Amino acid sequence: MHRFANPTQFMRIANAIFPWVAGLAVILFVIGLPIALVTSPPDYQQGETVRIMYIHVPSAWLALMVYGTMAGGSAAFLIWRHPIANLTAKAAAPMGAVFTGLALVTGMLWGQPMWGTFWVWDARLTSFLILFFLYLGYLALGDAFEDSERGDKAAAILCLVGSINIPIIHFSVTWWNTLHQPSIMKLGGDGVKSSVDGSILLPLFVMLGAFTMYFFAVLILRLRSELLAAKIRNARLSQAAVGDALGQAAE
Amino acid sequence: MTRKKRRLYFVILGLLGLGVGTALVLTAFQDNIVFFRSPTDVAEGKINPTQRFRVGGLVEEGSVVKDGENVSFAVTDMTNTLHIKYVGLLPDLFREGQGIIAEGKIENDGTFVASEVLAKHDEKYMPREVADALKKSGRWQEGTGKDGAPVAQGVKPVSTAPTSE
Image (cartoon, rainbow over all chains, first blue to last red; front, side):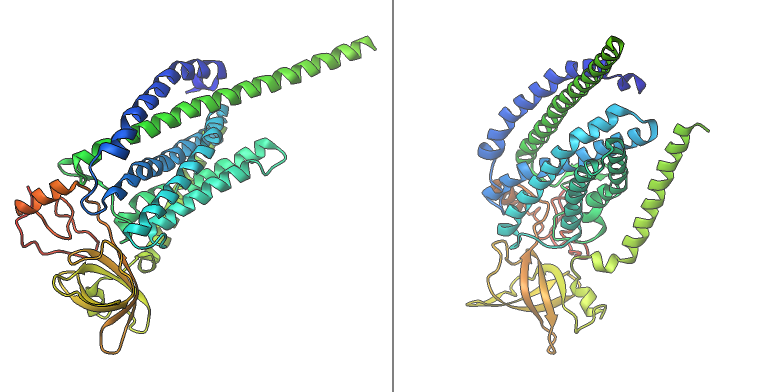
């Protein structure tokens, strides 16, 4: 655990993983996008509109997964004062907000032709909108304090409190009846089953993989630049300190 | 106890408390979070008749009568049926056997006058050929998921066709 607390060690591991996740993201997008958007069959009810799902579902999945990552990072930061965990949460947050916004917008574009409305206040849509506000709140709160350490702590606490929304989003379609359809994957006594035909499920899984790998690749890039920025800040500070000391000695 | 341990227990207890609190609130508001009621709820008098609400179910086969923009149809949960009147455009997915949700009020004559009708899409996604093949082999169940799961909670289809698998 604390092996990763050392930025140099952490970056060595992250840099080793980076080409793999970035490469996988490129490969999966190159395979997935043409299948999802062009060659996969139209749905028997929705027609071509089904293709919105290949963007909507991966975005929604990442919206939840990124929040899970941030909640883990925030907990590690609050409990063990793990600086890189906090940096990870902060680096992931804007991406999570974008994926949540993308899931909301694509969902609305799909809802209008299929349901007959852009928006309803059912349990799934409402809890997902709350997730979007949690992301925005996290980003705003982290910057709201003069003392960045206090801002980080406040944002981390907000993130943990908001994590209660994640199971609510996931189970909203099971616990209550909603306009939003239930989950396409079902965990039964005989394993995981899907209500989606293989020809539609395959491109969906490729896109899920592509989005996930893309997230990890960009996360590593963001962390790398954050750590480098911190290094430069520290170098400047110590340089200034040395300069001050020299100046005082000369006097 | 070290400070790290204390913080760990504090976070765990905090999340537990928050979880229990949220669960209690959500259970208490159960009836308000539910997006639509079933025709059975209506038949059993669980709904205040003066109140606007949403009702959901399957459009009964052979019940749709269209006269220009005036539509009347029946919504069923296979136990009870509710007659609905609506004036306006229907969503593309509206058809007999489809799950729909209507918002409106029950009039004195017992029909539900809807101001909005939404189509409910199920979690079944498949190409047309697969749907046709399923229908041909008699394994198709209107209003149920691929594996016979009901489209909507509170809508319990009675299986007449042999179920898949």
